[in-house]
Length: 275
Ligand SMILES: NC(=O)c1ccc[n+]([C@@H]2O[C@H](COP(=O)([O-])OP(=O)(O)OC[C@H]3O[C@@H](n4cnc5c(N)ncnc54)[C@H](OP(=O)(O)O)[C@@H]3O)[C@@H](O)[C@H]2O)c1
Image 1 (tube, protein in one colour):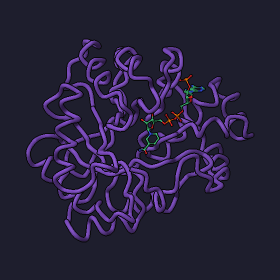
Image 2 (tube, rainbow, N blue to C red):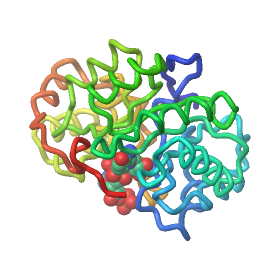
Image 3 (cartoon, rainbow, N blue to C red):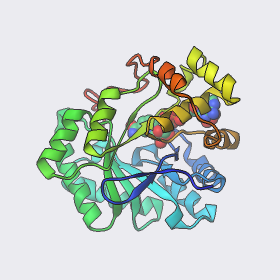
C-alpha cells in the first residue's frame, strides 16, 4: 500500500500519515516502532525529550524495512536551544538513533521568552547544510514566531507540527501555513478522545462503518494536514492506518468544522517555557 505524501517547500516529500512515540515507554519503543513500520506506516515521529530515541533506532533496524523507505523525525528540546547547543543536540540524537542523518528535525517549542529560537533555527540550517538532516521545521510555532524566522533568515520551515484536533482546528494558523508553503502536521490528533461521542463524528462513523478515531484521522487527511497518531497496541496501530477505503462528505467535513472550540489539550506555545 502506497500512502499519500505532501510536497515540502525544499523539494522533499512528507508521508501524510505516520505514528508518534510520545509517552511510549523506552522499553517498548523498539517493538512498537518495528510493528508499526511492518504494518505499513512510512513515518516515525520522535523527539529527544521522549527519552526513547535508542528504541526508535532499534525498531527501525529491527523492522527489516529499507531505511530509505522510512521517514524519521526528531526534535530539539527546549534546554538545547542556542546555536552550539543545538548542533550538539542534533549529533546526540543521531548517536542515540544510530543513524547518520534523519529526514526531519524540528525545534520542539519556541519558548519565546528565552528568545533563542532564531539562533536555534540558524543551527538547524547549518545541520541541514552539513547533511545531518534532509528537511528542517518547527513545532508549536505561532504566526509571529514563523514570520520572524522567515524574515531574518529567508528560510521557510518545511513543517510546523502543532496541536490540531476537532476541538482545536487552528484555521488561522493553517491558512498562514498554506500561504507560506508550510505543511501542517497535527499532534494529539485524536484530542484525548474528547470528540469521539460528538454527533458529527458518531454519525460519520456509523455511515462509514468506521470508528470515531478513524473518522477524526480521515478528517485530518481531508483538511490537507499530515497526521501522527500514537498507539502502543498493534490493533490500534492497524486501525489508525485503515483510512484509505472511505471518505467524508463535504457535509460531514462542515459538521466537524463546527466542533472547533479553540480548546487545547496541551500547553499554549506563547507561554510554555519549560526546559
Ligand atoms: N510537537 C509536540 O509538541 C507534540 C506534542 C504532543 C504529541 N506530539 C506527537 O504527536 C503524536 C500523537 O499525539 P499523542 O500521542 O498526544 O496523542 P493521540 O495520537 O491523539 O492519542 C493517543 C492516545 O489515543 C489512544 N488511541 C490511539 N488510537 C486509538 C484508537 N484507534 N481508538 C481509541 N483510542 C486510541 C492511545 O491509546 P493506546 O496506546 O491504548 O491505543 C493513546 O492513549 C505523539 O505521539 C508525538 O509523536 C507532538
